Image (cartoon, rainbow over all chains, first blue to last red; front, top):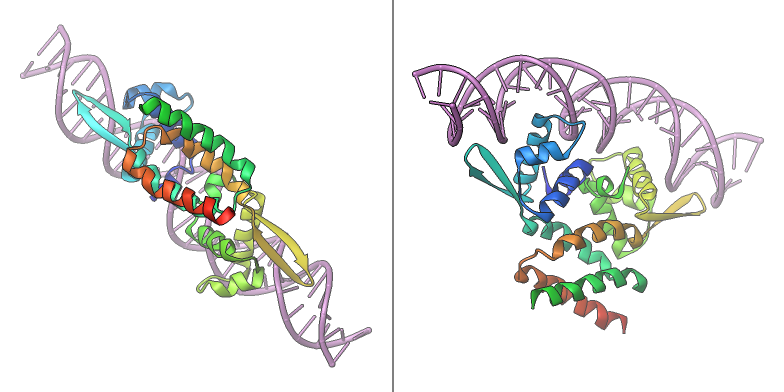
Length: 106
Length: 106
DNA sequence: CTAATGTATAACTGTTTGGTTCTATAAGCT
DNA sequence: AGCTTATAGAACCAAACAGTTATACATTAG
């Protein structure tokens, strides 16, 4: 499954959102979601991993998943092509975020 | 269908790419793609329109489709959250594009 | 060594998706 | 008015998807 399809699923986006805060074991992710079974979460994680959106490392019996933001670069590159056409006001949020990012890094 | 799913399909992304160059009638889009029928293209266009990614206007019997880049804002906003985590080198393309954009606009 | 824990895989199922052909609708042409 | 053109919608179908339960497989704990 490609990056675009991987992030098309709202549950998978929610998982990425959680992993953006901090890394989590598969089990932690399972308990973070209600109304979905462990195998279902496991399958979502596989898809995210195959798409290069998360990394996994083994720790005892646990599998620790971490965000791999590089995987989103493809998506962002595609969108970037269209920004030329954006009305100016749509840029404000982005610029704001860029500024904050710079501040945090220094 | 939401924005994320709408752009998950490669054919629909290709359509957006074509519309980014210039507006096109439904018929022009049909002939731009081989191995896909007119009704199939029509359905893709409906999905793009419902997702707010394209606009449509009627001209005689033709339906003229135009890009509605505002529709991509949702997608971009979602990705923007993750840029904080991006390694520096991933920023270079984006910055390059931003610069070019500014130049074109002035 | 055996039991328990954490997680992935297998097999199966209902729903969604993208495609098709056929038909309907609406505007222009003669 | 009747024919043609441009495009959407209906009905249908196969493949893909997301979910389930049951099972297998490591690793740690006792």
